Image 1: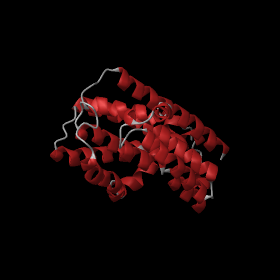
Image 2: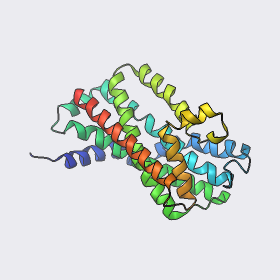
Image 3: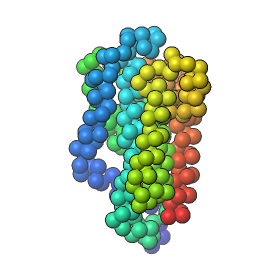
Length: 250
């Protein structure tokens, strides 16, 4: 039977999404950490943490991006489980194209990220957070693109580590926290020393975070939003190239 790459991507996407729909409780469990930060960390911030932006409007977009970072960067562990159980090898000998195995998996990451963002916004609404609706929609699109790239990189790391689970988690944890802190999600990097700001300038996550804050505040067309979109697109392109190459070698 002749198939197309798009058809294979849809098949893999559906296969990956089915367990999430059957067990939406997993999305709620993944929200525990971001909600803890929202409840316990945000009250410690001064009102002028974001300059002329209220602390809530500055912090909530950062928490949403942090939720994306924590959730998407760990998805490679699911692939490692499939490698250990032999499920992945069965997919490799199926008629599915190998690029579809990574693209479909990566695209699936958009769904739980959007669900988590919606729940965080609902929690923040009674606290007085009133984001711009169009800005939120555009922000989620940018965040979805970023998640595709990050998910593909996580899958590539899982393929490189294969049966060495400790290696996957060591590399993931080693990279996760510097990226988070240099992304300015919890504290503004602008108040840090010059060398810290210079290092943060090479972190694409910092541009995505700033774009989310601008969009949620109603700033749709600006260089900040454009820089965030370019950073997210660049991560997606690099992630998919690396992920597809890793899958072809698997």
